[in-house]
Length: 164
Ligand code: RP5
Figure 1 (cartoon, protein in one colour):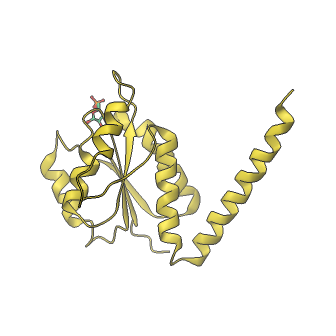
Figure 2 (figure 1 turned 120 degrees about the vertical axis):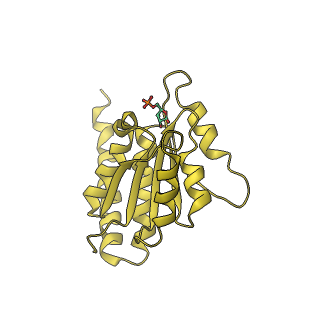
């Protein structure tokens, strides 16, 4: 697999990292090259546009974008690049991430953002989704994804033993 990043993990603030790290952990586990950086839609809009405009040329195949509150980052990235954007709503201080979810999910027709669950489960699933996208043309990655699911099934089946 190429060493240049295939997936971008971006977030509105370093305070989002605690959530987005779950995506980075999955990508690391699967050996998918990725980059992680803060690209705030509101505090650094020009950087955000530059990031989106360079995404195709740099070979990114997916962008996992997490933000909280008025979470415009995923939608604005999607507006500026054809690279698929996977949006992760970060749990916000005051509205627990429902505001983030609504900000990300309600895109107008024509500019899709694949929106995941609020928080770290959503971040992990966004990464698994990116892995599944890449696995379509990478048999070794597909095999790893299938093995991951088999392990997960075994863990779930073993849970019954804990019911005491
Ligand atoms: C959003 O504002 C960020 O995505 C973050 O979730 C939220 C709070 O940012 P900080 O004030 O913690 O930097 O733009």
